[in-house]
Structure formats: structure tokens, C-alpha cells
Image (cartoon, rainbow, N blue to C red; front, side, top):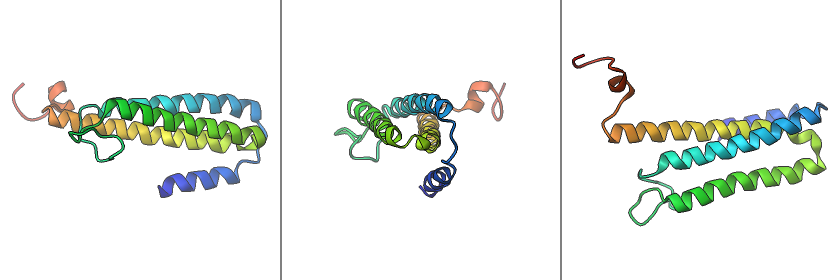
Length: 137
């Protein structure tokens, strides 16, 4: 959370640059990529235990219906709010791009972790799949 806050503060300081057309296009791409990464995170959580009470079902596992709705709604809501902000203050395109790509990284890291948890649960590992390491070959 501190890293995200530092990125937002640092990017706001650098927001004075006036390359709006390029940053506007980059912002559109960053919002789409952020939403896709959020949905990838939701997809990678399917069937796993979920700690967040808003995203779990009665059995304590990730609820795909709630998860997809909340995660995509949050990403699209954030993009919509950014659209309202940059409409009035176009110099904030660049900080919004940085925020979106930071969120994308967080969602991608969560998806990577979810897959690692699922693979361990299923007895899989990349080393076993590649035939590297202990055991016979």
C-alpha cells in the first residue's frame, strides 16, 4: 500500500508535462489492461479458499459470480472516475496511467500467487512439469 501511495504522489509531482494526446491513448490502454488483469486475478481464484468475505461463497471458496462482478465493477468504476477527473484536469492522464499500471502489476501478482497455490494443492510444480530436479528422469 505504501508503494502504491508513493507512486501516486510521485506521479502527481510529474504531472505538469503536456503530452496529452499520447497520455490519453496510453490511459485508455492502461485502463483496459488493468480490467483484464483484474479479471485474470478473479479467474485464477476460482475453486480456492477466499479470505475476503465479499468474494467467498457459503463454503469459504471464491465465488465466481460475486468475484467477477465486484472485481470488474471496481476496475471499471476506477476507470470511470479517472475519466471524470482527467476531463477537467487533462494533466492528470500520466498519474492515472501510472496508477493503472501499478494496479495491473498487483492484480497480475495476485493471479500468479493464486496459480501457485492451486498448483501446490494439486501436487503440481513447474519443476515436475519440466522434469527438473529431484526424482527420476
